[in-house]
Each structure stands twice: as C-alpha cells, then as structure tokens.
Image 1: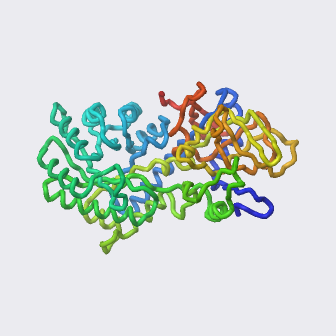
Image 2: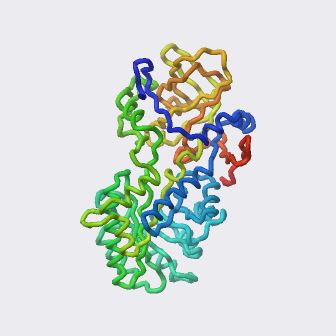
Image 3: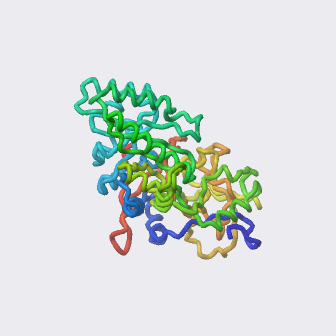
Length: 457
C-alpha cells in the first residue's frame, strides 16, 4: 500500500523498469554529474523503439492501416527524431523550428504532420514545399494555405480539416460542423492546388468511448467528402494514450491518504489536480482498447469501421512513446533539518519538472543515490527545493519519505520524466544552464556508453 501505519507518509513507487535500474546501479550517473557540473537528463532510445513497435503491432493485429507520428512537443531531444527516421515513423510539428529539426534529422517531409492554430506563412510555405500534411484549424487558416498553394507551389498542399469536438464546444481549436462544410466547399473550389486527405481532432482527457465516437464521426465525414471528389482517406485522432507510472493499489492509496500536512507549507492538492498516474490500460494497450470500442450508433468496432471504409488511422502520441525513456538527475547541495520541517536543495530548478507548470506536482517517488553506508536506515521525510531565490520554486512540495537522511553530494533521480517533464517549461533563470540531455547506449556490455544529444538550442 502507498500509506501504512508504519509509514504515514504517502509514497508513489514507479512500476519496475530494469533498463533504468541498470543505469542507476552502473555508477555512470555519478561520473556524469561530476563531468557536466549540474543537473542533467538521461535518455533511453531503446524504450522509444519498443513503445513504437508495440503500437504498430496493435494496428497490425487489428488489421488497421495506420501511421504513427511522434508529438515533438513532448520532448525536444533530437534522438527521438533520429529514431523516427530510422524506424520510418513520422513527426508532429507545430513550428518552423520543429519542422526544420524533423527534416534536418532525416524524417521525410511526407512523414511530417503540421498541427497547431493560425500557422504563419513561413511555416505553411516550408510545409507545402516538403509535402508535409497540414492540419487546418480554421477557415482563415485554410485560406492562407490555399493562397500559399496557389502562389508558385510545386505540389498541391496536403491537408486535414480539424474538427471541434462536440464534447468540448468551448475549445479554441477546430471547426464547427458548419465551418467544416464551408471548408469542404473551399477545398473543392481550390481544385488541384490542394489535396484534402481527411479530418482530425484532439480530445482532452483519456476516456476511450468519446474518442471512439468522434473517430466514427470523422469516418462518416470522409465518406461524405469523397462524394465531392476529395481524397479524404485519413483521420487523425491526435494523442491521448495514457501512461501508467504506478500500480493501481499505490495510486488509490496515495489519493486516499494524501492531505495538506504531507506538503511543504501546508499546500494542498485535489485528486483532479494530478495527472492520472495509474491507468488500467496504457500506451499500446489503450490503443487496442480504442480500436475494439464500438462508436455510438455503429454495430461494429472502430477497427472494423476503419477497414471497411478504407480509412487510414493517424496517431500523434508523445508521452506514450516516451514511457520509461528517460529520467532526470539532480545533485543535493543543501540539507536543512527543522524537526518536522525538512528541506533539500538541489542544483537545479522546478522548471525542469514541468508538471509545476500546470500548478500540480510530479508525483513518482524520486530515488536517492547515496554513497553513505554508515547512516542507519529509517524514514526521513523532506521536500525538495530549487537553487533559486524564489520561495515557490520547489521541485517536490510533498515530503518524500527518504530511506535515510540525504547528504550533500547525493544524487536525486526523478524517474520516467521524458514525457513532457524535461523541457516544456525550461528557463535560464538566474543564468543557470539548461540541463543537458545524455543519450545512453546499453548495447555495449558490461557498462553503458553515453553521448550528448544532438539537439541545438
């Protein structure tokens, strides 16, 4: 259980991860911390490959023609794009910088999808030149794309029309049914300047049935668009495949036991404030469940609906491709003991654990790597503060139940941080250097090799 009478402090242990454990026990992290002189992230590209292969296997077993794009916003590291290029996967980009990075690291233009609202002319021009698929968010976005395609483009503009989810009518993204009808008319009128390949949506949350229902609706929209002479053979359902960081019992126990007394300065969180760190189905398993679901109003599964209509399923996962693909390492440089009020200070900031961006907390328990074998074991609860002058700059508000008193010089490793935690909210505040990313190669026994990631800031 996450909370017991013997240990009143809520904990959230991560699921077993032999690859990460092998790095933690190799001695490499101490050397890297010394060599790099500050906090860093380490990346495990094998995990990315494994997650991608698992999703493709689910598509194959369901008989669904599909294509996976990595959502680049989830982590800026170049190694993930390199893995996409090596494995024939795509990249979801939303800026000129992201598009150039994808192209520069070997991803073919036709394997890139451009998302995001109100795209600038530079982005549209580059995307059309390289044959990228462009998700159109609004009628003026479509008009700008058609203008770009009509002014000297060597090839038609490939596009999807993005749907406003009925369950999220106040979303600032996507088009209403009436706007989609107008957009289809304009695509027909544009003739050979554009190739309208289908529809897309992004849906908040991780519920399966609403996603299946909306996917079924998009298949119908494709069939109707085909009667107008448009290609309309693809739908994109975005991301939304959850990751499970911990087991069900630990997650239930944590939510039931945690309260304001477990956090620095009495801060409080509600269950709704947290990412769902346990999911009954996750990653490729969540995709399997989605394909087996029956969209409302149809007497068949989503997989059957897709195959019967000849529609290709496009996915844009980020976090789910990065599950267990990296961790974040800080060195402890201060230990403050005030009785029941204990604080650690590490050599980085909370901006490298981006859950704080959402006014939340990254909950998986950090692991203490200590060379101290003399201090007796025992529970030593402490929050984790950052090396800045801001009162609110805490990496972990929760009082972590460390197995012994941490010492200056010990390492603190936050597990499974590759998905959205490492750099979504990074900053050079105080002129502190951004934590570098280190790519770990575990193919050379007995000890892993490493190199710096090739991403250029």
